[in-house]
Length: 62
Image (cartoon, rainbow, N blue to C red):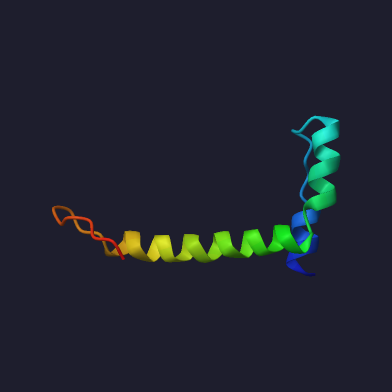
């Protein structure tokens, strides 16, 4: 099963019906998938950077 299908199958029951329908319709579009993939890439890098932080050291731009 592709990632798009997994994202599209998420239950949006906590959203009002109008927004729920919109969320379902756009969940597996190319643009949405591209954004999701980018978010996972950034999160992975952020987690790696956070793991290198030590108390007392100044933060540096990476």
